[in-house]
Length: 399
Figure (tube, rainbow, N blue to C red):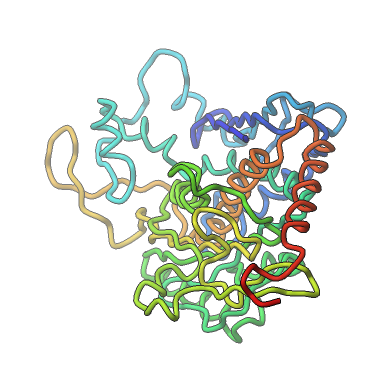
């Protein structure tokens, strides 16, 4: 299994992630990590912070001469703005120069202040900030490298932004990732003519009004083998694991596996994926992908599909949102940190990270091994066994 832990605040000295459970021998480079972090900063509608806050990556432990050692991997992502915040975010005894007492609706501010007994919203918002996802993306980069050796690719694309929704069911493949990332909003170019421009115009209109937009990103996992996850315990079900991981992303309010929301209103005869036998491939096949590659808490070997629904960001330029000062109890307006008009394109990259981490963890649980070579041998043995088991038509088919 794969475990990871992140630490750090939005304007702190650095973010740190420790990843435990990676087998030895996985190639790791700072350049790969830098590339994934750069993808997280993509998207039209991001605030100025994305332009001037570069990510400075240092691998602290667990990697020697470009390969994992099988020990925990620790990576630091330094905050290039730290000198501006060194006094305000100092770990040493003292008081901040400005206490934030007007919690922002839609954020963790008020609930966190009540839970921990804080009188300053910054004690909550610094950790609750989506800046934390940079550390997750680092962990996800390591998971993606492992998955690539197992023949698994995870990509995402934006299918909805505000009230602009793709009218196409065409999905990008791993070879299309560069084209998706080249889009201003990370939609799949060519899948719906004019989609990118309509989304950009929606962002411009929201920005002019001082407002924000939510949207939908679809995550696709190609090459996932049969049998990741399990039906035997509630906490082993792969759809449950994916749902929890994706809902942990800041501002994501709903997750859909396959056509989950749509099929809830259909009859059963129109809601499931019929099973057939592909004699050429000597494999079972589903004729549709309504289940999103998951049945009974396990992967089916088909394309894994998950959609994440992100709410509009709650920090606005105007109109301002009403709140209450926690000291005076008087009605006021929430304070404003820097914000984006939308972060849906970046959310898709973070969603890739979370799916990759779940799949990598379950792949390691399934195949095991202390080294990458051992994991691959175990994977190959499992695939061979599945092939032997499925060497003929399903029982009772008459074949």
